[in-house]
Length: 145
Image (cartoon, rainbow, N blue to C red; front, side, top):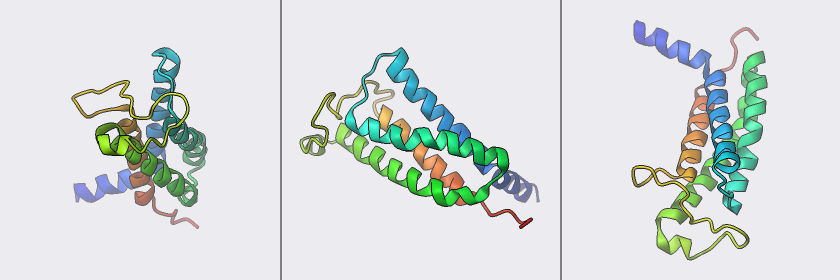
């Protein structure tokens, strides 16, 4: 019985949890570029373009408990996660890095961070987009309508 209560509690707060993840990702991205001075590559910019609005939209949706927002959030988080995955593969697999989707500015295969041998900035973005996607899938429509 306790398990059902816990799951119900989680499902009732998925908008807030997704918003918190998006805020951490947005603030982390700004920290890496504005404080640490890491210049974002082209694929990083696409991920930012998809993540930053999530922080605003999810914040408003969480405040108003607008669970229908998931139909707008899911496409952004899935596309962002896909770009993050491709970016991560480009960093970790030399053959894919040879394709060079980034043609201007900073190369996309540069590892500004490489914690524990596999955690890079695109990996962190992939985790954030995946969590947001998961929370949106867990979001159930309000029963009061």
